[in-house]
Length: 193
Image (cartoon, rainbow, N blue to C red; front, top):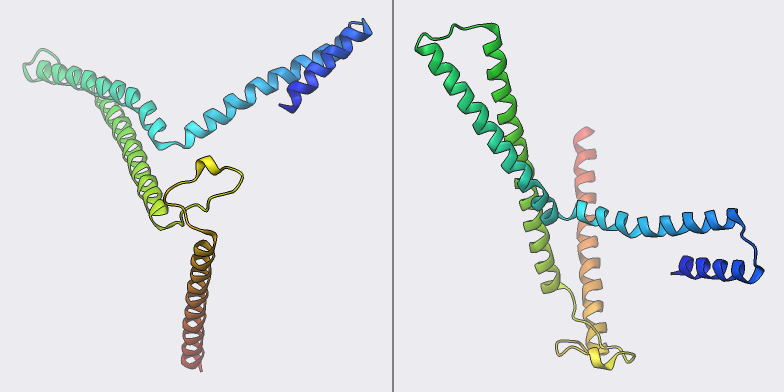
């Protein structure tokens, strides 16, 4: 937004001066291009990390790979049938066809593995989101936005007491871990003597 303001200010200054400075025009054009590219890059980066979007992108590749596997398999079956019927003899070129089938099958399985990972990641993200909403505190209403107050929101005193209980729980866990590590360290030193 700042750069749009900057560009419009530069353009108005050029019009006021009545001069056509090609260097300033080039800078303004470059600035506009980088601004247009930034949202696209951010969107593509977000989509790269989104397992559902990645899954949707891999489905056409999986279909193509499956089609390739089936095509090569049918060619191999035809070739093997011709050999079995005595119409062809085995040659070294035939081994290359079998390797192509192995490679295409391996590619298909690799895509299946990627899809499985995407689905597992999406499931994990969903369960983490559900746990987060289940265990995180409800919002405290703010005075600046009274129209957005939720019915499940906490009063400020309730929020403070909940945060204090979470802090004391975290301290208890920290102390328990410290005691455990001291006991383990003490047993390790006693065993080495």
